[in-house]
Structure formats: C-alpha cells, structure tokens
Length: 320
Length: 320
Image (cartoon, each protein chain N blue to C red):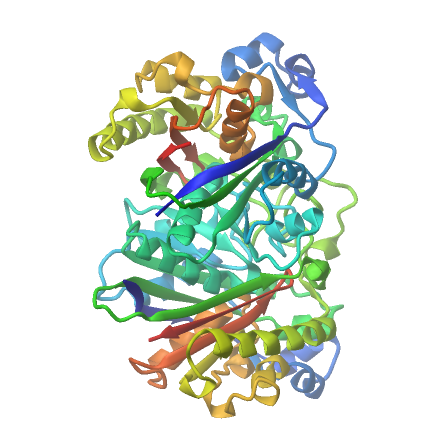
C-alpha cells in the first residue's frame, strides 16, 4: 500500500514587490539583493494566511471530492490558538473533517507529507489535504537586510490519497535535527519565551531573524551527506531522479544542489527569483508550479530536500 | 503490529497557587472559583516550557534508551520559530534525533499519539517521545475570571514504542473539528492575524480567552455522540474500559463523562482540582500520574477523550 499525489494548487498573491522597492525598505541596492539572495521579486499578500491557503486548497481539491483530514503545514500561524487548520476548514466551508497542524518551520510540508503517508498506510485516513501558507513579509526586519530581502508570501496545497494499486510511490524518508543551531533562524516572539506581556520583549523579537551565511555553511555539509545516504540506502540512483524540489531558501542554497550535490541544473525546480523564500510554502509551491506547467509528469521520480529552522534537514523520494 | 506506552513522566512546578491567591488576581472569591471551575490549586512554573518538558521527558526515558523521534505536542510554543521540539532536544542533550511539533491545542497529545502509532505501524520510527508542556498561567486574563481561574502549568512526556508481539493495543481513534466554533477558545495574538507589529493588536489579544459555558453546551452533545459511536464501532463495550482519561477542561466537563457519559466516577482520572487546566499537558499528565500512583496497570483499557480549541474533539481506545 502506498500514497499518491492526486491534487495540487497554489496561491500567488497578485501584488508583486520588485527588488527595487525592497531595496529602499532595507536601505540596500537592487544589485545587492540579487547578488545576496537571487530574488528579483516576491509577492506581498493582502489577505491572511487562512484565505491564502483556502484559495490553493480549492484548486487542489477541484474534482477530487472532500478530504477526510486537513493538515496545516505552515511556518507561522494565523494566531496562537486555535491552530491554523481550523481556519482553513472554515474558509473552505468543509464540515465533519478533523484538522490539526504540523510545524517544523520550512520543513512543515515534508514532515506533513511523511505523516500523511503513515496515516494512509495505517488505514486511518484515505484522503489528506496538506496546506502550507506563509506570509513572511509581515515579519521582515529592515535592519536585517538579507533575510528581509529573501522573504515572500505564498501558499500551496497538496492532496494525498491512498494508492490502490500495488505500486509503492513513497520510497525514502530521512530527517534530522541539530538543536545546537537553534538560534540560527528565529522568530523569538509569539510564545512563552518572549511573550508580548513580558516587559523584556522587544519589537525586534517579533521579526524574522536568520544568520544565512552560518546556516549555509552548516547545512551544505549536512545536505551533501543526506544526498549521499539517500542514494546509498534507497535502492535508487541519483540518475533516476526526474526532479529535485528543494526548499527555496536562497538562490545560493538551491544552486548548491547542483554545485555540490551534482544534480543537473535543469532538473532542479527553482522558483526563488520570482517568489522569494516563502517559508513552509516554498516546497509545495515549487511542486505545484512544476505540475501546473507540465514539467512534472506521472511516473517522475521527485526528490524533495530542504532545511528548516532547528536546524533541521529532511528529504523524501516519491514517484508522482 | 501495534504500539505500546513504555515510559511516562511528569513535571509539576513546585510553586503552588491556591485559589485564595487566584481569587485576588481575578477579583472573585475562593468559593466562586471552586464553584465555577473545581480548581483548588494550580502550579505556576518559573522555568520555561522547554525546561519543564525536559524534566518530564527524562523520567519517561529513564532506562528506555534514546528515542528516534521527538514530537512536541503542546498548546502554546516557546517561540514562533523554531518549533518547541528543537528546544526539547537541546535541553535533553540528545543528538541525531529528528524533531517536529503537532498542534491541535488541548488535543495535541492525542493527535501526536495517533500520528506516532501510524509512524510506528509504517516502520518509519520505532521509539517516539511525545512531550506536552504548557505554561497557561502567562496568558491569564484577570478580566476573564473563569478561564483565568482554570489555567495552570505543567508538563508530561510519554514514550511510545513498537509492540513486538501480535497484540494490538491501539483499538480506536476518532477526531472531528467544528470550525464554526473557532472563536470559543482563542489566543488571537502571536501570528499573522494580530501580529505584534500590527497597530490594531491590543494587549488583550495576547491573553487566553474562552467562552466556557458555550463550549460546554456545544461539546456535551458532541462528546455524548462520540462516546456512543466508540462503543458501537470499536468492538469494545463501555464496561471494558478500565480508566477514562479526559482532558482536564474543568470539573464540570470531567464530571459530564459520569453524569451524561455514564462512566463510573471512580474510573475517571480527575486531576483538575490540584493542577487546573494545563492545556495540552492535561491529558498526558493525568495518564502519567495514574501510572505513577499505580492505578493504571498493564492490560488496562484506557479511554482518552477531550475537546480542544477549534472546536475539535478526539478520542482513542488503547490498552496500556
């Protein structure tokens, strides 16, 4: 028994912010942004994460009926309580469907995909809707120009169903977390540590903060090792991979899968120049875009890989 | 193949706040608190959720080795990013173990338990540590006396392992979400909706708010139906249940499992008078306390049931 990706959808907010505009916000030049991040433009959402996710979800569900579980797999919630999945259910006007959230920052979607596969394999659910919706633009800190230039808004939804044939589509999963790097990517506010009612909490605690160069340095070796292990342990060869779908952390991070990972550049789905880093939505957005434009075809072998705050890394090998 | 609960631990903060003290904070009487909530005393933590959870986790892990997955299943995080599981890993000084969070407010633990069972059934992980740690006292609103009187702090950790024998221990699972009741329990702040940088966000948005009477009214019928369905669909009879482990929402909510659910009062684990409502930690705390004091014995049939913000309800039938 296995799973199948049966639906996908994306929400790209209509408002485009060119790097020329972002440059003024962070007091740098357009050229500096392109050189540091590779982001030419990003979308800025004027609707909240629940509405964004619902637009993507309606596309993923079109013609596919009603899911029996909704998982929110976003990086930042709409509010602390209830979790965002509830607001997705409400926006979608779907009744009698349980909802919860999975959170592993930028890896939330991959972790949800792996949990969805286990839930379907165990005959607990049959049709699971995973929605990732992030509005990173809200937390941009103009005093931290690199991360502020990277972030963009977007949402994607993926529908996972039980594969009724004998074909096994989910081939490999690996995740790890190195908590000694917990401070490399943070939004310190919003919880018990830097609570809004705590007089020691500053405005900056509510901004997104990321030490890009340190993450890149730490993650490059970890990613290299994860790729090596995948093709040592999965029974697949690197050449079998049709498409690499990496987290869209930055252009440099994506290119590392070519420069160091030795995947062909034209096999790596790269949307970062037009969307920026959309936190947890980046991976499913890259997937949904490449399905929509016809690059990804049935039977293709997809290699998902990425980093998340923690520092965590995960990868999955799945036949579309 | 099935799962087994192999370890459990609890952290009860040493600082006790009697209802006499809480009464002053909310400008009501001790008698009013006891009548409305049934809470005589609650604990107030002076350490943060990651340290609280780690104390409980060390007890759950004692003699059991290292887990291969850590799931944070709390109601409110330490910070927005990274998710709290990373901080548990760091506090526990455990290396090379992936971590993520599952969030369904007060049902987070039950949802994590169901996901852990699916992950183990699917041979993805073998030994999963679930930690629920909540510090609800921080978000108490003195102007909302009933919810402020209810909340307390605490943490619990449960270790789930693969059951190597043929015995099936996880018998039944059901969850549902009614998002039309999303506003009945909220912490509106901490995310994109009432973001700290949004000038329209007020101090009150960061408090816990709960319309207890409306939840009770809505949840009582839903719980009654869920109990009926459990014993119609699971192959077990209500009389087979050794212990009911409800979410410790309030004394009235717990007693409803006797008054309307028709379970014997002495079979219902009730810790609310001494701990208050500890959000997601309440259910695993009740479980860990009843294991520790010897009430729960191997072979006992446990019926977990509870409500969470959303409004969601879930139940699980598990042999200890």
